[in-house]
Image 1: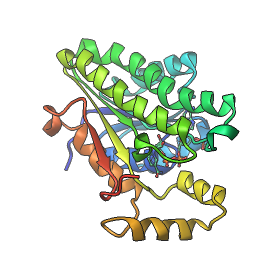
Image 2: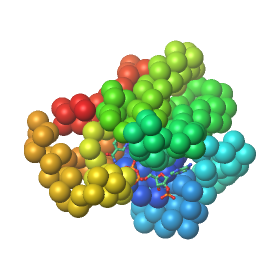
Image 3: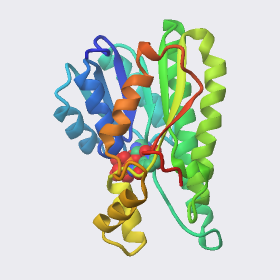
Length: 251
Ligand code: NAP
């Protein structure tokens, strides 16, 4: 399929993990792709490896308004427009409530919620005049509640409300806004969770696979496939939705 020929796709936090897998899928389907991440060299290395018709890697801390403005400007300068935005950048700072610091709370809110807000606000400046756009936000099954993740869970449910509100505001301008809520996906984020739980990553994956209705854990490609559908024109009557891509295993 070549659903994204002529389209420009921006993926945040895309140097690795789900973001990199998603950037790869859009590149495979013909898009010009911008890989945004904290580390410019990591972002550029991923961008170069996509084999896209054109790809750029840019440094951008999504929680920094000035950095977001600079990055979106650079994307439009270098790739010509911004048709699809995937708000994927994310972090965890897990702890039980009584041990959770104010910094752990603020950091998680700033990357997931403020980051999606800043990126979307900047991107819509280009999408609204074009009367075309797709915004996809990464939520999580943890939105439904997860022990030790009060900050992350609140942010990821916040992402769902944010998604619905943007869908209502931007629909009249030809812009679809949806969210994907992944279950357990094998990335450095879930490997770090294993370390926090004093487990080998393979052990945590095995336990999650055993408990999952489809008896496996997810891969970035599982999320990328759903992203490529939700941001396509085939999905133009779908907006404001959160699609759980979790093998059926909500927390
Ligand atoms: P990951 O492997 O940890 O990758 C996240 C990427 O985001 C990293 O490259 C990271 O850069 C970057 N990043 C962090 N803070 C950023 C910021 N302020 N601005 C720009 N980039 C930033 O995580 P992942 O597992 O691929 O997760 C991707 C998204 O899916 C996240 O929103 C996550 O919450 C969500 N999700 C993941 C899972 C899962 O099971 N993996 C499940 C549900 C939802 P550094 O390396 O420099 O920190």
